[in-house]
Image (tube, rainbow, N blue to C red; front, side):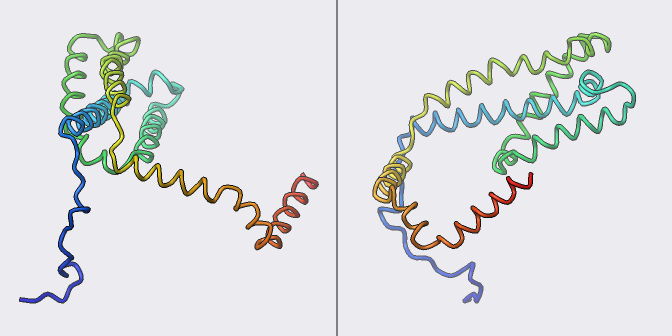
Amino acid sequence: MRSHFGWFKRRRQLQLDDVTVVDRGMLRKAVGAAALGNAMEWFDFGVYGYLAVTLGQVFFPASNPTAQLIATFATFTVAFLVRPIGGMVFGPLGGYIAGAATVTVLHMSVTPAQMLDWGWRVPFLIAGPLGLLGLYMRMKLEETPAFRAYTEQSEQRERQTAGQGLMTLLRLHWPQLLKCMGLVLVFNVTD
């Protein structure tokens, strides 16, 4: 049966240049460092979400408990808005399991008053050494040959075109440049 959809069109065969060969040890280090960093990040998110009420009481004005919780979750939301999409696929499971266990043990060990005083810091302190280990692992990773080749090509292109940007701007776009200069001048004079 022949499909008329573009998704199922036959693609060209893979060529030898299409396959990137990576050293197995280097790949293992890269995956380990990425997984540890991602797990620690999700651990922190899980702990933050679980301790939202406590963190609201510690960091935000005590006049309104609802406003405290909303402010805590608004802060939490900002962190999610800047997260890369890929981390959302693999991290939640590891962060949920480790975060839930840590917070459960912590709640069984301290009173609510102790939790408000100092206990909320413990889960984040547990994540600190592992976060430093993840940072160390990522700093020791080597760049892939494909990335090094791309970087070299990019630097070579920059060296070849260096200095041409200003001349092109002055030669081809001088009317727009004058308009921008005029707008900046007017804005600064009237301000």
